[in-house]
Length: 208
Image 1 (cartoon, helix red, strand yellow):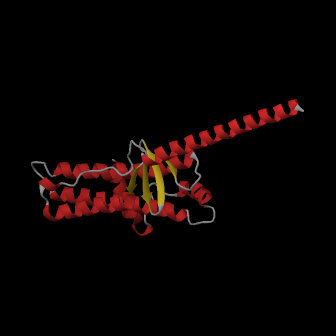
Image 2 (cartoon, rainbow, N blue to C red):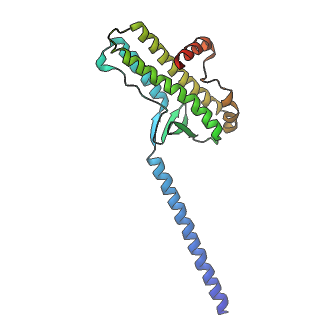
Image 3 (cartoon, rainbow, N blue to C red):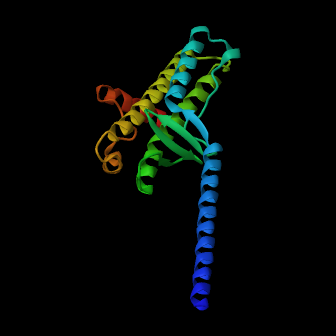
């Protein structure tokens, strides 16, 4: 009888310790997740696209060298950053989309999305830099600057169009599957059909 009671007591102790251990591990995991979210930078991508375009437009109205718009990357982030586009939250780190909140996507598809967004992000940044540099040219060519600025604005429009179309893919009953099967079909970059020809020509020039 004593043996049975002892066994039951030992079992109870082991069970209690196991529960405490599991609880401690769960708490530790939640704490780590909370720390990750707390240390995650957050950015509204749509607002940033609009801000970059507005700053360039405002500058072109007065053309003061003292107020040149600062060139900024949108996607190129070293630290883990949560960037929202059209209601989707993109996890970005080291210039790569590592995930989209609420979607279960393969590395292959995430790489495809990264390629599309990073290409456009690099182009808009480089065009902004080119435009700013040209203003300090001794023989400044304002027609050249206007062409560069048009390409800059066009690239921002392409970026906005691309993230909008990715968001549209998530409106289905199975958003993860829809994104998985359709992202590869999107052109690089995705372009509004009514301006496809002129935009593609501009993109070819930008990429050279």
